[in-house]
Image (tube, rainbow, N blue to C red; front, side, top):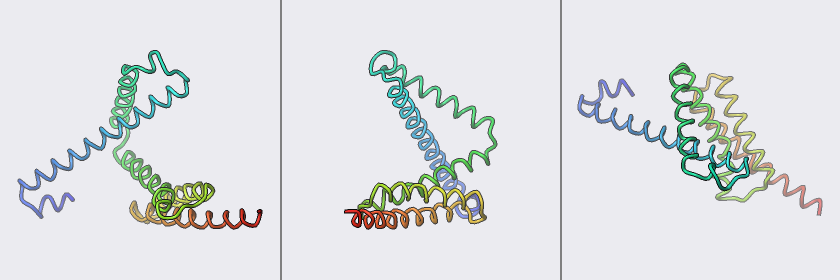
Length: 168
């Protein structure tokens, strides 16, 4: 992308495109921070079993945003950039591969719970193994994980239906 911005377009267009990229990065980071802090405050509230008091106030939610923001800042300041990039690729790629069969395939064909669990496990394992243990790259690993997730969702769902039909 840097070569394209340097040689493919003029300085004005290059500046505008860089600005758009920075805006997209800021928006994504902001959304992730608020999503994680909201999930954290909700899970803490549920784990503590409290629906009223300090945990039900906006102050508690804002405290969770502050904790997640400070933790992210410390992580960005002290972790090497390559490690953070790999964590992002590994996290997003394996998440996409894990949930592909359950979310996309179930839209068109309803499988079983065993098929859903198998597809999540297969997508995660294949994507993580290809990302960490091979030289395929960060695009192919999650895509092969998606294929494994879809195949396991359909295959295990069909096998469990046959077993259930024989049992009755």
